[in-house]
Image (cartoon, rainbow, N blue to C red; front, side, top):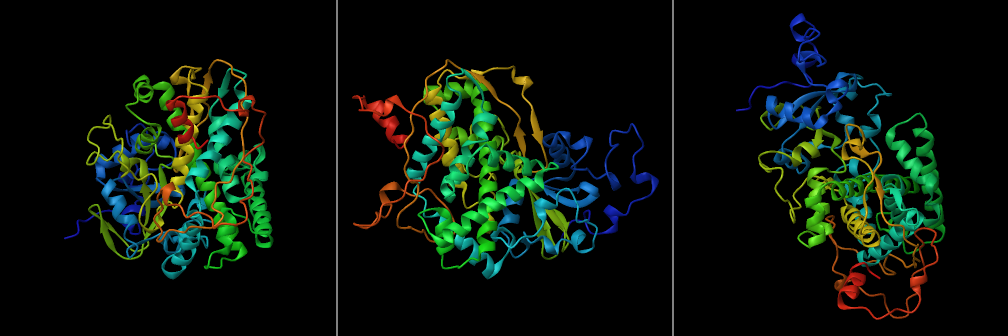
Length: 503
């Protein structure tokens, strides 16, 4: 028997105009929407984490809420309920065109969250054969990446960024490192290393903020990807874009450009947040850093812990019900919208009764979604965070926070929370040289299926004898490195560290 509940498309939630439905000023519930439903915007939503817990206490694993303009939405708060939703494509879709408020005109074209749910002809918004075709092309291109080579590129990009501030003895690890490293690496992976500069980093950050110049910033990135698509159509290289173009799915130029945009921006935002979050914990939690320094925790384990505690995307809008169904004890009507609650799902007390418990080695968090639309590039993000943070700490082992912890500030939205600055100090050091190599196979080795996992370097298919050499793909301008001369003899530990960093 399906329990009675609020309906997001019925009058019991949206059409409550009587005096009892609107609490008087001064009431603890003042500021809620019709029927006392919590709003995911405005004063009550300044601390979304606390709001989610309040909603969990009132409604359980799935709770009714209101988006901007009081558009109704279900928030999925439970860990298992989120997994059930994303793994049930027969019941739930990412195609927003079936969303009842959108079909009825309740949602206006200028809705502030429209960039998050507006339908596009990309793999994350389609189903069936079209999803298989588009998703297959993306995962096919991802599968050509040699992760050992990628880690070398990440290490070189890290050294280049650290070179910019190492002599100053102080830096902002958000604006000078976390915001730049993912863009430098992704530009190289896509095959447009020459497009990486401060301008494209600013454009990506600006469009994600939704400022008055966001449209122009988005166009700047689209123009760069349009040029890249045209270049690779005419002259293929051994990069992600060329493999995407050459895939048997035969994507059009428009499809190529849109998928490059999704890959670039999603990887950039998620990884920039992940880098900042992990570095903040290392710098502010003495126990966390002691575990790293003492060998009780590796950097990859620290990254996984952060993916549980502070996922790069706190929620995703959205999923939409294709039929009347039930989820978490709530009656979901056909056309209802649902918010994938990544952050609240990760702290579901049914799976994490003790939030202080160590989650090392546990990858069952929701940070990369799940089901048919699980993030295909999650191993790229992990590699950037693992290798970048490890290389940074090796270069600057004495790095320390240069402000009080309570002075740190964030900018937040329904989708994510971004650390504004992370000021640090350290002993000034001279710059080091970086070298350049490619991060992709000369001959693509595409793994079957859509699930992306880090390949075993030993199992990588070698390029055939006599194959043309892979062209060099610079990640960012290099600085001279006096250490790049003849190698001095080094101990076992130094050789092990250099092997891990891909040098």
